[in-house]
Length: 377
Image (cartoon, rainbow, N blue to C red):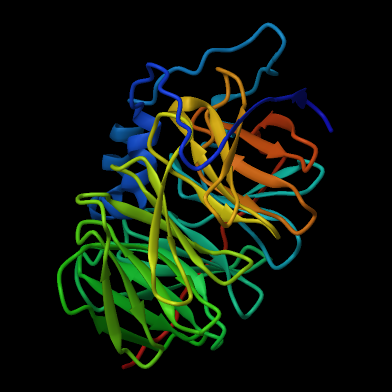
């Protein structure tokens, strides 16, 4: 692998009651990461996002971590990351109208989405394409593996599309943070919206083993459970103003979620109980994913990954001062992949070795004509 730095990590083990309190400040990347799902969706234009990302904190470099020189125009700034249908990793780009693809060998390609598009969250669709939310255009986008793009406009103005997943019913499910709605979208472009009973800013979304959807209400401080025919149940969180955001389903079927403001991780059991676990490092959790046995959470300001067992006990992997993990996903080869605000991608092995390499584009697909998928109620 070219331009890759590998290193073993320091490990701090803590049970569910142990905590560390290093004097770390909340950085701009952490704030941006949570806002990108919950609040960044409200930004009216791509230029607003660019102004915000100009405030990224500098990430110190290390003498043992040389970085190759690259033209700024070819360096990407990855944000959300997901496993694609082709076995590669796909990520959204914060500073440009593009989506990136990285192979297991760290070869990076860029796909142009067309003028004005802003990919935020993305997922592998049921049709073998990449689907993504586009808050700048108030629409949902589809990127084919051949680089073709298509868009479905959302009927509610300024709805703030945020989270997106591929459901077991063969449809896409999307949260509309500003409109307080959840949308169901077929691969052919038919869209149906469900209005949530109370305002709460739906952000992250996941499907449980019961084939119901679990939604983090970022400002409503609760988890919603939504059946695929639109019936909603609401579950308030024990901690006030916790700001739930990311949501995933663990291997045991429980629903796990981040609590950004509370610096906790929550667990919603299949029996309907909510448990909260204070993190073993100081700082808000941002990214969350599940492997075959554990839940993994990033804490950017602590430069750390937290691994949680089903009882809430934790092991912390300190990555080093020059790594700041943001969004994260688990690949079936056992590796964790995460994004960073300095234009670097990270890969974490099952043996606790972290690799990082610059998100420098090796090849760029030419933009293709955009298509409009016709949606109907």
